[in-house]
Length: 163
Image (cartoon, rainbow, N blue to C red; front, side, top):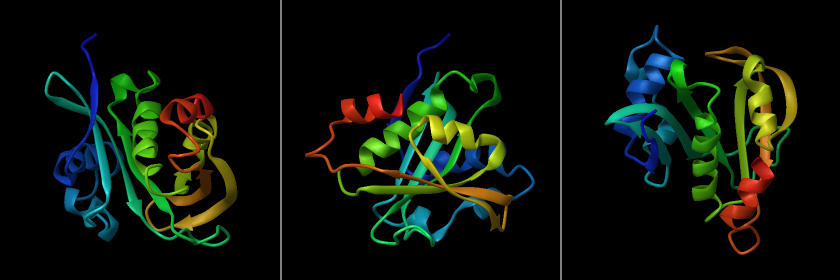
């Protein structure tokens, strides 16, 4: 297996894989939200032999009720090519995004289809609400992960919580 590296990248790098893996029936530009283009948005990509094999994004977005809507970040667009699913790459992508977020904020949330909700629970996210109507995915769960600030939690501590 070839070495895989994960790095922060521009939005343009994550969109093609996000579209092909998560929304193949839609035009790639339709996978971009207003949060994606904010200056402080975080986009990470895993690459192997100059091919993008996984992506994740984090955007500053107020959390919906019943979560506390104070300053929060939303994880979205997590995708890994099919041959690498189940290898831990998705976990590494979410962890990388969360490590970048912890430099500034303390709350992370996301919507996830119920079939992948267990993945996020293993990463430390708590299921807050089920059966939430979502315009793209049908019914989804709402998940939240509370992170300490950088002074309280090093990335090593975050990794051990998320393992």
